[in-house]
Image 1 (cartoon, protein in one colour):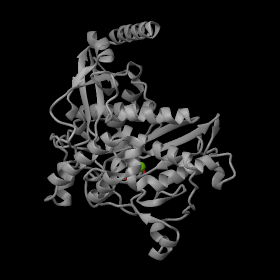
Image 2 (cartoon, rainbow, N blue to C red):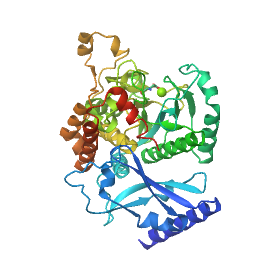
Image 3 (cartoon, rainbow, N blue to C red):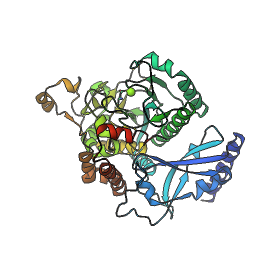
Image 4 (cartoon, helix red, strand yellow):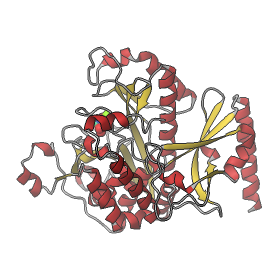
Length: 454
Ligand code: GLU
Ligand code: MG
C-alpha cells in the first residue's frame, strides 16, 4: 500500500516537472456525461496532485446536464450531494497556450466509482473482458462539419464529396490540425473531405478501449481549438443540416484471446472464429437495446436513414456500409487486422459509454455462446420487404422516443451497465424530446448544431 502510494507520489511529481518544463500553467480535466457533452474543471499546475488524488468537487447533476444547459433531475440525482472529479495523470497531454489536459473520472466522496461515470464503466467492461481472457482494441473515426462561429453554414465553392477540392479549400485549417495533433502526440491516420459540404473525417489508430476514448475527447478539443484559431467552429451534431448526410462516430474493435485474433484465422465466414462470431451475434442481438447509448440524442434518429452509410439496417456484412455492423477482413489492405465496425454510433453519444455498451454486448455474446447470424452481402435497401424479412434484416428505429423507451425497459442494458447510467441517459434524452416537441427539423438542427462542440 505504502509502496503504491509513494510510486503514485513520484509519478505525480515527475508529471508536474515535465509539464512545468513544457510551459504548462493550467491543467484541464474532463468528463463526458450522459448527454454526450464534455464538462471540465481546471486547476493551476501546482494543484496537479490534488486534482489527481482527492479530485475537485462536482455536483451529482453533472451526470444529467442537458444540451441546452438545463438539468434533467432523476429520483436519485438531486441538488444534494457531491462527487469528486479525479484526473488520470497517465493520460496527460500538453495542449498549446500553457494548458495541459487529462481525462477524468467521477467518484463518490468515499472513493467508490460513481455508478453513472461512463469512463469508469468502460474500465469495468474492459476489466471483465480481461478476466474472461479477452483483449479488446478500439479504433475511432471522427466526422464533423466546419461551420461559422455562430453555427451557420460557411460559404464555400462547390463541394466535391471525397474531393481534393475540400482539402485545398480548407488547407490552412487542416495543416494546423495535423500539426497540433502531432505536437500533442495524437497519431491521426488519415483525413479526408466527406460527403457533406464542409464535412471532414479523420481516423485514430486502435488502442485499449479507455485510452482510445480518451484520445477522442482530446482530439475533439483540438479540433475545437484549431477551428477557433481559423474563425470557425466544428459541429459534432449527428445531423447539423437536415436533408443531407449526418456525421457518424464509427467505432472499430478487434478481440484477441491468448494472442490469437478472434476475427481471423478460423473456419467461419472470412476466417471468423466461433468466439468472434458469438461477439458479433451478441451485438446484433442487443443493438436495439443499447441504441439509446449510441444514437439516443434528439438528432440521432434522423441521421439513421438508409442510403447514408450510417448503418441503419440491423445486420452484418463484409465491407457493407449499409449494415450496422460492417466486417473488415484481414489482409494486406488492412494492416490493423480483421475488425468489426459499429457504424450507427454518432458524435452526440458519450464515447466511453458507446464503447462500454458495444464491448459489453460482445462479451455477453461470447459468454452465452451466441451464433453468428447469416451475413448480408449486398445493400439491404435493394431487397424487397419480403426479402428483408426472409433474411431477418430490419431497419433500426429512428424515433427518439422509441429508442429511449426501449433502453429504459431493457433488462439487458440495465443488467450489463447498471441502472444509474440507464436512468441518467433516459432522463437527459427525454428532456431533449420535451424541449424539442414544437421544433421543425430545420429549427432542431440549427438550435443544437453546436451542442456537442467542445
Ligand atoms: N457520414 C456517414 C454517417 O453518418 C458515414 C460516411 C462514411 O461511411 O464514412 O455515418
Ligand atoms: Mg465517413
